[in-house]
Amino acid sequence: MSNQRAAFEKQMTPIQGKAVWTRKDMEDDTSWKFQLSDAMRADIHENLMRVDVENIVFKDLKAEGFPMPGLAAELAAMKDSLVKGGGVTLVSGLEVDR
Image 1 (cartoon, rainbow, N blue to C red):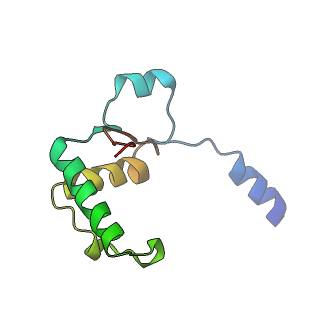
Image 2: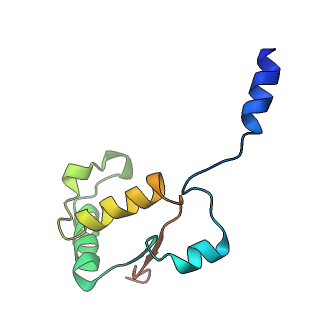
């Protein structure tokens, strides 16, 4: 079998796992939806204010310099949902006007 044929057949293999979902699946499963609490929003706001005051450039931001202990578990769950789940995450409660 040629390399081209093998590559084509690999592409034609059905996708399986949690990354395969329908609208109904997503409506029935809320594990991909995250609601930020007041404390989580405060963590984000506090860090963004510090970034602004200290004039930190985006490319220089590092996780260790952006502590959000109240949000750490939620961020880990979001990452898990994206990487190991359906590849979609909805975050509600961000204050875009703030």
